[in-house]
Length: 114
Image: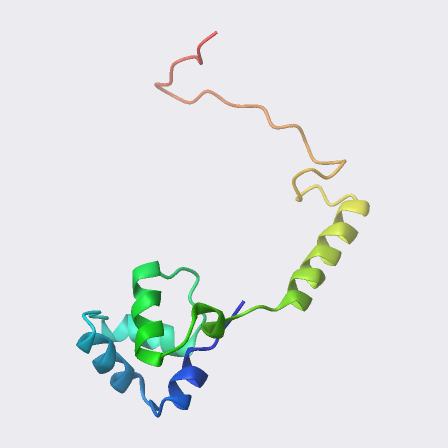
């Protein structure tokens, strides 16, 4: 996914993160300067749905306009993982040569129920 906040904001005449932050505050979403900077410059790994709803209201857009699908990246990752599995990369879960996982009992742990 690609985060499209800056382009959608520019389409609404919002050119600075401070202006976006002020407009979000008008709708009741108080964001710290650090969080706003992260939203403005990078793709967030997570975002609260309530926050996304306010952002979409301010920008008069839908979440689909802010989150752009990138299916070519998904396919590239899929191809890479498939190639690594056939090569026997033991670091990938489910690969034929991955070692069996056996649980270890640590200190002060009880045995699992029988």
